[in-house]
Amino acid sequence: MTDRPFPNTPITQSNNIVDISGVGLKQFWNLRAHMQSASQLATANYPETLDRIFIIGAPYFFPTVWGWIKRWFDPITTSKIFILSQSDMKSTLESFIEPANIPKKYGGELEFNWCDPPVYDPALNDVITWKGDYKSLPTGPMYWRDKGDHIELEAVGTVDGKQRRDIVATVRKTAIEQETEAANKASEEATQPLPAATAEAINASSAGQPKPGSYVVSTEGIATLSLQDDKNYTDVNEKQDSAPTASATEEVNKA
Image: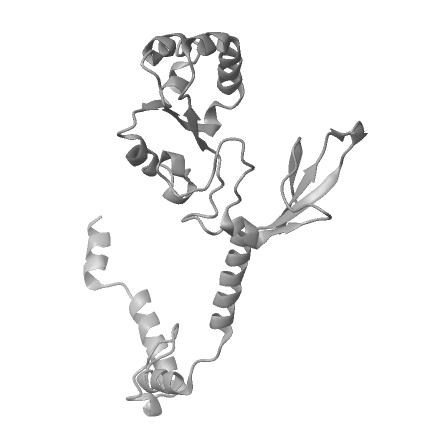
């Protein structure tokens, strides 16, 4: 999905809104076993996927209930739970969730009510291809399978006692498509010839300049050099190197 600021970074965490408005003390007490199981599941298996839990609509007695609940969670999990009042609910949610993804009931822009089917992201509709008679996600277990340039959604489990292995939809990896397109564009730009005016300007500025890796020798006196000159220069140097100096001879005699 490329509608995010960093599409190459996978989504590995989630924010959750828990609306407990209208829940009485007796209901909380009846749900204690369920909440214990939920806390154990979240703590033991999925603690890293939980970013924040926002509790909304807390009744006046909730501090007492919270005293029970927080003992069932580990300290790291409880640090991710935030109890929001009506006055700070909208501003707090908008600091973590885009208004387009917050239900209108909580001050956002999303048309969504409890028990409604999932609302698909508009960008998802542009990259998803439904298979067969499917036009939405079915209920039951499903697998996302990586197929290279796309992801395949397979519905499994049973329906009316029969095994189900249906390909529901495929989703293109638009982030990979953008990377490939950018790489191809850069390659094309690198292989394109320079415009005539640019090439002419480069040639004019480098005229008379030595090529990289070369060295310049002054041309003065080159015409008067010969092999004999080189031989004479070598003979003179050899004689100078082999003949000992007077001072050196005196030092040897003294020794």
